[in-house]
Length: 400
Image 1 (cartoon, rainbow, N blue to C red):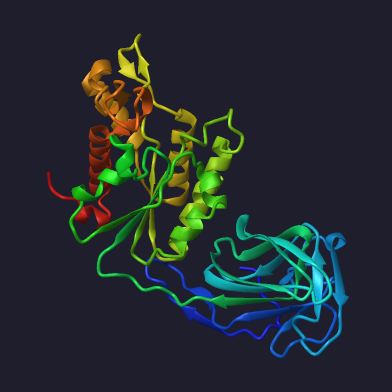
Image 2: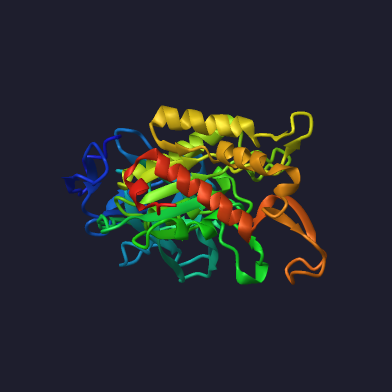
């Protein structure tokens, strides 16, 4: 962990988070930054356009060529001056934890146009204010990598002040909640989409009633897009010590013709480790789940092929390197398909005749997504895989 500037008014307390082998230092008092060359508000650390980031300082701008400053004068130390950032980042070394960030952005004598990304996640949508108006925004963030990065853009991105406040540590519940991070094969669908279903929608009945499943999976996401759209951040800001994070991606990571989604196998491992790190930092237990197989039949061998083999292998390597539990749903699903044969797998997948379901008036032939029956059978395989892991959660799997 990189050290913080000695000039900060910081208090550190060492706390042991359940589920972690080592104690982490936790920021115990807010950090307050006053941007601009004018008077400094009481209790704040001044940041000017000359403050480049250095490890010794522990905060600063990455590219000073894109940073200027102005002082309008006046009695308000916060709002009378600012720094203007034209597409650059302000970074702060912080312990990995959950934070509330409060930002003031504006100019008493000019317009403001600003967008703010925190850790690549848009936290302040494009906002415009006229002279004398100020953006006062607050948002939460689950920091993973030990360095907060705020990227400011817009035609007139003017920053007056930033306050970073650590959130209270969460405590474990009596029984675990299981959060699901995945794609369309996992997600929960609205009733209007019947009979389409994801396995995450059907898994709860295979576990005892003490457990709670929180399915945050959504279609079309890869490990990268799920992260940059703030969906992992949302999970990490709610997950508790002793909870579980099930992670199944690969279908969209492998979509090389869709560059918005595509993630190379090497980068896939990097992103998976980010999910793992974020969960373990908060005392939760990650479980990797290899991507469920598609209905991809090899007539020559009279068997089904492993889908996305490079990503299956990359996830297995990640599990080995991080010593994280893994359910090989890829193998479990394909072995199951083989017991049914090509025609026998049709009731699992979204193969529907026209005019039967309102959501699919023209019918559909889909070898990736599941009908409710298929999603239920895949959920059964996941539950069996968890039971065989012999981890604490295994005791919550219902006996067959």
